[in-house]
Length: 114
Length: 115
Image (cartoon, rainbow over all chains, first blue to last red; front, side, top):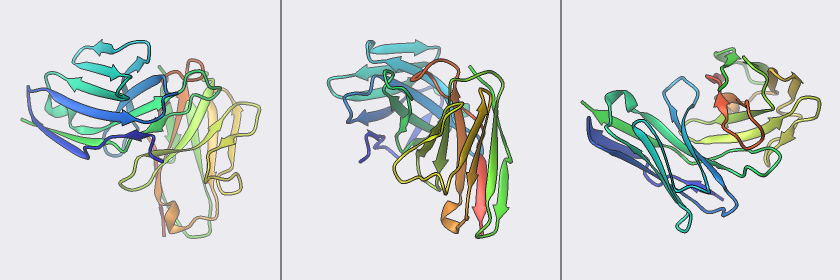
């Protein structure tokens, strides 16, 4: 049962343009969502998060949008840079639980071309 | 945030042996977690490690295969026992400097190859 899904295995964009990575979830109990970036041979690096009480959170070039009714979130990167090329994972958790474990999507490989 | 280190960074092990992975955090963290990332797959939670209590394992993972220690608020170990080639994966630890459900920060991972 894949509760967090990233349906696009890969995305290719030109440097300077917008990258939009999408994520869908099925568990309505999730109330905290995160995006991580992962380079080969490294651990995931936290990028940005959003609580379910918000519909948008912005941090520099990164913006996360949350549509609770559609159970969908997206990460926008503007402008995209070649150094953004990595695997991007969305993750979800239930803050009210005693452990707060993360459920990850399958990841999307982003390639930004110069 | 938290800075997390893992040792070893990689290892090649023989079938039937065990490998213990160490995870060190630069600050006290409430929760520590152990994940596995099999080739081409996403991250799957193995267990949650709290200090002073037994780890809580996810479905499909058992203590005999993945014993975990959490002796204090900055350190944990994961042992992968009785290794088989199917255990070849990246093993990652993470920690939450805040409370439960807050942002998790990850170590660099341990890349295990079992022959």
